[in-house]
Image 1 (tube, rainbow, N blue to C red):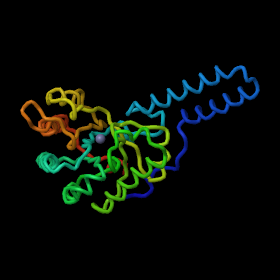
Image 2 (tube, rainbow, N blue to C red):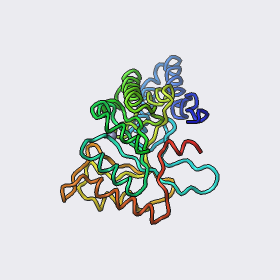
Image 3 (cartoon, rainbow, N blue to C red):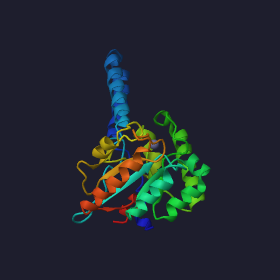
Length: 272
Ligand SMILES: [Zn+2]
């Protein structure tokens, strides 16, 4: 891969600059006029609530750069990215790979490091078939967004090492478990040369048994530049008992073809 597309050095997002400035101002105000402490404290509490809210919005850019669509450079693109999270899964992933092959489509798999360790052959098969595996943390901890810099760094670098060791390919993107973040994440990603990716639309296919509704959430309207989120791990079962992704993906790929769009991996979109 072309190294000139490496992640630039970390610089704080404007919200973080503003937050740091607010903390300093509040401290200075209390030192100079101690009676204003309730106001200073309120300002700091409101600021922290704002930072927490920004971390709860997976598609927000307040805490740092975040791919919610594919980048466009020079003219129109006709590309969409299918992203598949939480695998590999020994039952579902092989069928997803078959469906992708039938449609000559490529996808980005945000894999959990521990699952890559457990199913190394499956992880290698994903890469062998021309797809990319990216970093979705080592253990997919439910309290990921509550971890400090060291915990975040350990979770992400362990997955990075695991995926590189098993597949021979170093991830270039990270997606946070459930999309939830905190202000410590951005500098950790910059140090590990990872870009944060979320999505344009998600189908909620880990919780919805209604394949039609999942398809509609993803495909209406389907537009070039979209990053779509599905799951091969933790997939909900449809009313017919099948993993929802397996009922949705062929329809979605038919729609991609009908709109004369192409599927690309996030990594291939980096090279623009
Ligand atoms: Zn996930």
